[in-house]
Image 1 (cartoon, helix red, strand yellow):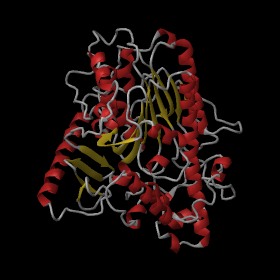
Image 2 (cartoon, helix red, strand yellow; image 1 turned 60 degrees about the vertical axis):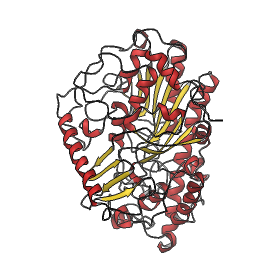
Image 3 (cartoon, rainbow, N blue to C red; image 1 turned 60 degrees about the horizontal axis):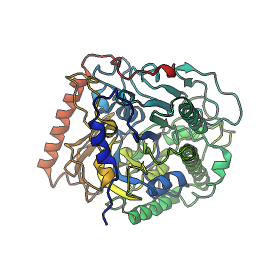
Image 4 (cartoon, rainbow, N blue to C red; image 1 turned 135 degrees about the horizontal axis):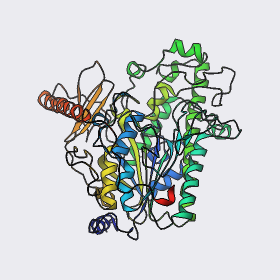
Length: 547
């Protein structure tokens, strides 16, 4: 028997029939949680073919949906801004980063779409919405926020903020950022349960894991120590076998391209000087590494795995709270990564102590191109690039009361820009008067039909641009190029892994697609140059009891 969504379509129709978004909250309107990982590879989680222990994410996937073709923008702040605004970063002065400009006046943020329907909105973790939205509560219109601002210290951050107020540097032992992000979220949810139990909530749970530096609790690292001594070539092959068995991706496993993977960050010589003889910024075959390099690189991947594992544990605490408080059934949970795993190599923050244990507070390590290629299996390239390895994200959706399919795949394309229109459709539509009449239409699509069935949601195209790396996906084809390179062309339905460049066979199609890319780029640039300044939303502002 064909399974159907029990309430998404009828739920949306019922909400759209409400007389006004200012009316009391309708019974059954779901809580919403969006969980964002940072620099997590497509295949890191167990439910996407990884060997890392992620029982919480796996459980959410087993009881919900996995999208096979969900996309980011290839970098942290553009993806997070696209999520919160519903626009491509090129429409909002967000890519490339330009701190001298503001978000255009037509932009509204996620809470502005939800608060008129009675939602209280909470944020915990990385914010990174640029430019101009510096205060998450005052400017971002969240009711409570724990804002992680020090990305370079997982154990002893020097500058984070609570409700826009700077917190003192952390000095106590036992602190770990992922745990604190979850703890603050649980604090906000507990407060919500006590003070406003009849209102639905939106929680943006934004981890900074497994973003560099590779730092994790020793007990978590110990679980994976020795697991990766087989090397990145073997682990990549094992992941591809599981991905193929799951039916997640079409296309063969491509050969690695070290000349591109090493194009970001410091050279091997510079990294060895800063870190030690076991470090490398290249992506050679594992067999060609020295014994010292193999041991050190295996330890780095163990730390990366520990960070993903720890994040999953902390997500598990939030899910347990939902269960204990009877909220899990009617909570829509979404999980994604802001870009692919990172091949960046550098040392920032307080530097690197060569005497410190790898993964401890004194160390500063990056995953590097070898393991980033493995984390992004079965794709090539990494964070910053707009080939599949840089922009493909896991996307898990769980909503027991609203989704009857269990453990199913969804093959329609999705993107960060789709979340605002999806949630707007879910809660009852875009509130009247929220956006200026001349605002550009939201470029994303409502994904709710895919919650009900594995259907294709039509769209004109998906646009990608980041630091000279360009792409456009349209009608089952993708044109893509690296900065300074030639345009390539791939048939995505058959070759998602981008192994067969068809540019020479289909020059007219390629030309049509690249011309469309140029047209969109000019259009978006014009939109971004409109009147600056974040619109001060009046409707649905903070409730009196949030002060």
